[in-house]
Amino acid sequence: MFLRPALAFLAVLLLAPAAAAQSEEDVYAQIESLHGNADGFFEVFSLLQDAVMFGDPVTWGQYAFFPLVVNANGETYDVLEEQDLADNFDMLVSFDTQQAFLNQDVADLIVTAEGVGVGSGAVWISNVCLDDDCAATQWGIIAINN
Image (cartoon, rainbow, N blue to C red; front, side, top):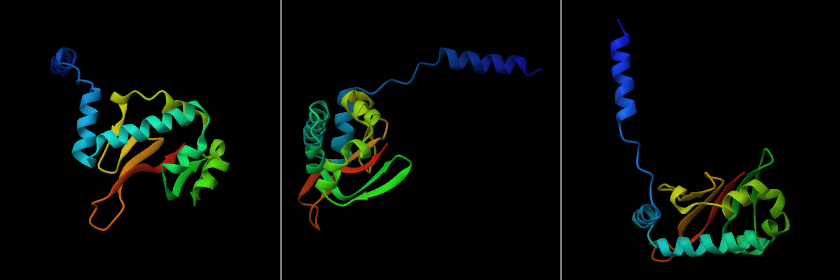
């Protein structure tokens, strides 16, 4: 009795085109639309990837907004300044998070109104207003979730 509708539903699922994956251009357009200055995001993203590649935690501190909430090792930390992040980088930013950041495919970035998620949301970067009328902005790390 229910076999015929179930088979019809299965046929529709199998014949329906798969959802199109987003392209790097789509991601760029989403960032530009939601946050503006997509070029600024990709500049910071590239600098942070280079910092992971060359073992440079100081750069991460330079592109983070403090206090920075970091979830690591089953704990939540409020990192108060650049030096704290640099001194405790390997504890605060796990090897897996660093590798995910390093190997991130641009087409797989998560783009939301809150920011851009790297490594399936392990690191969140946003374009933050620096003044009351948001005339000046800067891209930086707003959260780390190992």
